[in-house]
Image 1 (cartoon, each protein chain N blue to C red):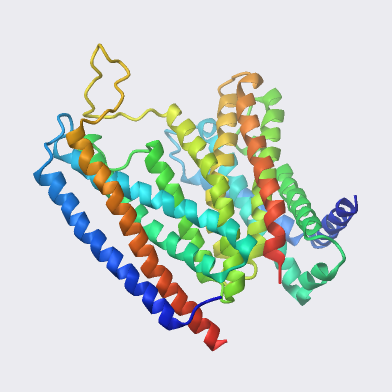
Image 2: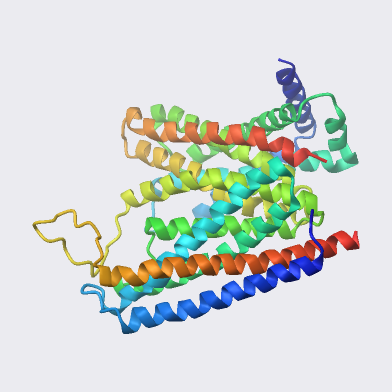
Length: 239
Length: 225
């Protein structure tokens, strides 16, 4: 079911095109965020990191969820291409998770006063990160492609089941150790809950950025999927 | 019924092999004792009392001992291709999982049974009636650890670097049960009543059920040839 390498090359070319479009639009996001969006009142310039951070989190979580779902599909359909996709998605997910874990502390240093806090979301991302590091360690330790695909799918599915437990853990963990959130303005008296409603002018680049990061995810995964197909075709012809 | 009998036969076989040599059991318990010692020697002797350290030490030690114990679970079957023998036997793959899991659980409980009194002795633990609840936490945690660990050790044993890969895969999965169990223990050390740690026991039980179910479903996929 693995196509030949010329088909894989076509996939890679398509992925490159999507990625180039995505990168150009990303430059547009930067321009929009820095040139046409005012600074946020409480956080100032540091707020603008949100336009990269939150969409990266969206892309990473989508990537990781797809690894688990595709794992289930793999056992159902037994199509090797699904495994190639899972690997591609996990790898791209790691890249976006790296973006979260670098932009988060940079923002934290400015707003919280320290790079790392055992904040639930930060901890959650770190745990996902080590989980997927294990996923790649497992893949790289197995030579037989069929066995690799099965084991990776098993780990992907179990990882998906672990996610709600990690979620629970980090939130319960935090309730024991409340973190000082420096620099956050107190809520006004008339609105003690202060729901984080962004004014449109601040929200606009964020929404645009979500679209761009989704496009970048698709572009990256398509390239990586094409590379995976080419490799699988080679492995098939070697065997 | 047939599945259960097959599972018990596999578990009995594994535990019998273990009992006859006792090497792995001895090594794992000595390892647990050494981890206790490492904690005692690496602490700030002036500032941190043993009692403050005790709950964390118990859970870190048990987690590491489980890791050492699980590594041997399928290593046993690698010698003389014994695994192929089991796979050829007319029993379902789920029965193999349950058998292997029961053996691992029995093995881990034996380690816990030896490490637990050592911990009480070394760390001067004086919460006598509550110790039963700590033992219950240890049982529930062991069920979860071994459910996930049995699947993972079946996978890692077929790879290069099995000894290194198992902890890397298993530790992220151990964080939630470890957290639930150690929070329960800390509460008991603070002198809270048993009813207050009920929620931690329930969370552990939920984790155990979820992963036993998914492990039973996925283990046959690992064993497919």
